[in-house]
Image 1 (cartoon, helix red, strand yellow):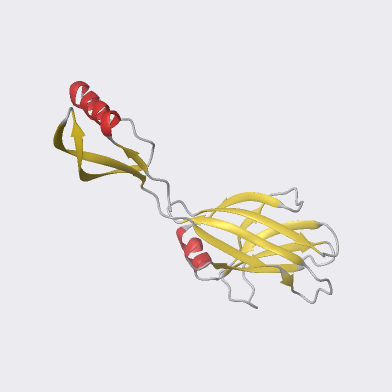
Image 2 (cartoon, rainbow, N blue to C red):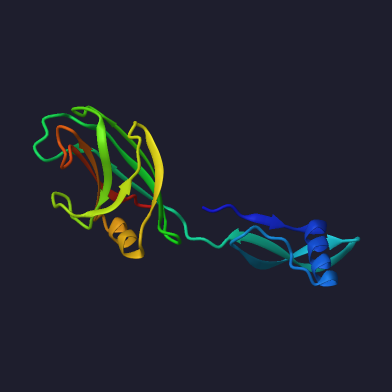
Length: 178
């Protein structure tokens, strides 16, 4: 899960006292939520009830997406490799790594396509910038509708080559179960 930061004891009291005395906000990492949980801490030899703050990022958990390359459009090659990606459902940013082998030649274009079920074709959702060298790492920003299609298994990545300008290899992407 996401990292959790715990402030307790004298550090917590210092931050809360500073905020109370100066009116300044307690310094927190960006995009965090503050949750309080009561606990009993000894203080100056006396038992006192003190709130312990837990700071956790207020962001949705990234979703793992993957797919393996297979031939399409009558290609006689045997492509290998695939796509491993993470979708941030809050921002719809997809961060990917693509690896491929066994193509007829160098890759001339790469696109995310959809929405389409396996075996169906669809328009380009997002182009991938080159140079096209395996492994290729990068990111694309999807719309909310495109991200929903990705989560539903309706998006694929297509590798285009000179021999197969309509696409030599295709990886149908699917969300990995948690």
